Length: 369
Ligand SMILES: C[S@@+](CC[C@H](N)C(=O)[O-])C[C@H]1O[C@@H](n2cnc3c(N)ncnc32)[C@H](O)[C@@H]1O
Image (cartoon, rainbow, N blue to C red):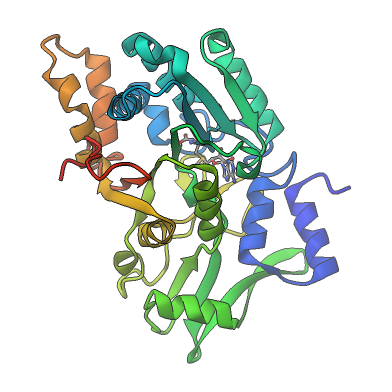
């Protein structure tokens, strides 16, 4: 049994031939026990390879807890409200949200349940350790994937932070007068790119997004988003899907000026020279196509608010906190600034809220008109 991602990839390529890039990315990040994320090693935060909005501190959790409280109030405080997070890493955001709900919105406590969708047993273990002090206050359930989440007839607030950017992507490149799909092969023990003519289903997507056929133009497509939101829509009868991530609407993502695409590899807080280097030891990530989420969600009956950059969405969400007469601590202010300042997460990260089966009067305070 191969012991590392590199040996597993080599074995796969030798036995099955070149790997499509999304398969390469899937193995690199999620191969059981050894993948970049599934190993359970520290990946986010100062001790890891990159910072996320969650690593800045508890203010994001406080703002989301406010939004959950608003949602409960709008529904006249339902007897049961399910909160669901997918991609919680070590569980810090869920911890911050529950702590803030318990402190600032105690009237909700008896109605809340938390569900974490976590396929990696080492990560689920770390989440359990962090959340253990809250077990006696709020029921918390773990699921290995969305399909094992019970279908919720109760209102549900689903959220994720930097989840979708880590879903595997298919890579396309226009050269020699036609579109190609990028594969990974191995020559003399070195991983290398191999381009093959793009199959019809990709050509259809390329045409749908009007991706410019310019020599050398490279881009990512993420077809897995469609079944993901469809499954969520089946599980959530009434509620919210809140996506916090970096990305762009399709016309900007596939603008002729962005000819190198958005795929990057990250290691030790720097960009790695190649997505094929250090497999299993570096993050692989690509921007979210927010238009795809909206189109797909709308076709399934969701109503979309946003996307808006954090500097706008989170500032609106924080308005009532900022208006409180008691001054905010320096620590709080620094944390908030990290979230909303354009040179940190304020500009790069967007919030998209998709609401299902909520009365038309529902208007989240993150998106006031
Ligand atoms: C960039 S990290 C973000 C972690 C955390 N949410 C944060 O913002 O700090 C991406 C996370 O998404 C998780 N992930 C990716 N695909 C997933 C899936 N299908 N189900 C559950 N988690 C997933 C990864 O394991 C990883 O923990």
